[in-house]
Image (cartoon, rainbow, N blue to C red; front, top):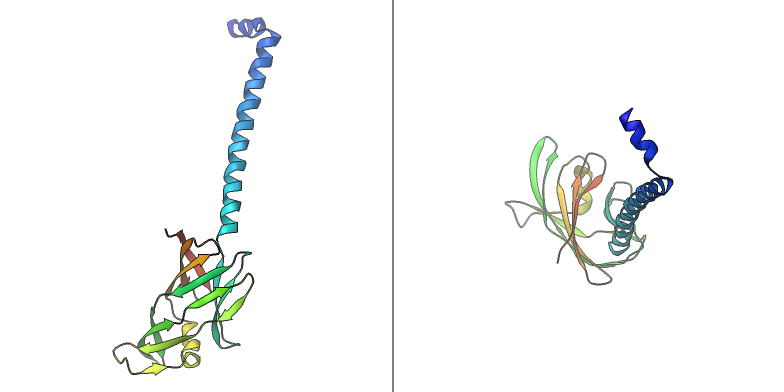
Length: 172
């Protein structure tokens, strides 16, 4: 009864102030949430979204820019991959040619050579090694710039059916 008595003694003006204060706190929390969302959207517009794709029908390893931002000076680090060829494990290093520019929604075939590790003079054609890459697990590291010369570092992991972006960092 004592609490009920105190609540009845609170004036309309005090209730109005209390309600306004709660509305203000809720509005500030909503503004904070929208600000985070806006920062994420601005970040998405600055970062080109690259994707790798192994296409056995077109016989190639492709890189695609799935964003509205140009990617340039794309360099792919050498990739060490172990593949099974007719029951034998073989180790290769894939060396990729750099890509100068990749426009929005553009998809290009990557040029690379497959060098048999331990036998540097033994080079396989990309067409000969591509079918074996579909079942291999490996990591591809790509460095690239956007149109504003901000550098990015992306790491892709080859899963059984596709490439998955594992990490994307701004490298400055």
